[in-house]
Length: 282
Ligand SMILES: Nc1ncnc2c1ncn2[C@@H]1O[C@H](COP(=O)(O)OP(=O)(O)OP(=O)(O)O)[C@@H](O)[C@H]1O
Image 1 (cartoon, rainbow, N blue to C red):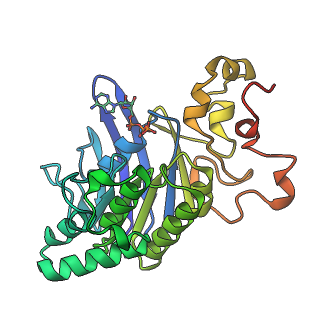
Image 2: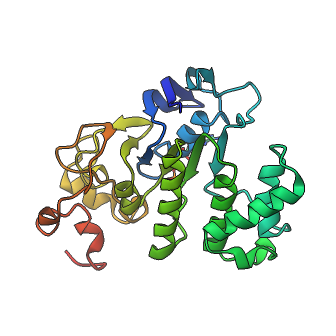
């Protein structure tokens, strides 16, 4: 089992998108990566998985760099992309099978394993359906089946539950846990507090920097925003969703103990409270 290590990772285009990040994503653990929209989660996952070359610093796994000079990920890496990356005119099973065939698995075996992977996400019956005929949540589960079927050492999932109802979210979290339990590095970019809560570790980003997430940074502002700043942000909060962490947990990043919020804290000290209020309420 190897950890995925980011050392001094900086990424610049016309501006700096990631600022000198040092992070370890541990093997055998689920790590949540949270932060407002545009904070750099997808960019960070792309560098972690070898799709993008950092401007400075590097991502390494098992002692070797993730960036191989081409933008093709190493075979030990699987992505579950935010936009799924499925081929619309192929069937659900073919979309999954392709990932296995690309790794040299015999086509018949690949098809069998693809069907089994769809069954993990309770969509075995959709195997013959063209992806373009599926709902968003069904496509998301096909993308998860494809990402998880190969048994990779590093699994990077970008908002993998964004289209799912609570039941399917629970199913996906259980399957991600199985991947971690067999020793994989599992990193999940998410806006969903329930996903953060299900993870072992949590790192929060804001504008490309790691931030202290011992407070719900989307609500309080990571750079010391005042309540009036928050009022002015208005609807943007809805898109951002809360980043939450147990009060008193290590700042910026770290291992987490469950439960995230103690039951007796929940009523009086609820970090989601703002998001639960009906629209228009004070
Ligand atoms: N190719 C690009 N060229 C210029 N800017 C980019 C490019 N890709 C991303 N960005 C910018 O980098 C920042 C981080 O984007 P990124 O997609 O990593 O954020 P994110 O946290 O994943 O957002 P979301 O939660 O909305 O998916 C954003 O401000 C985005 O506009």
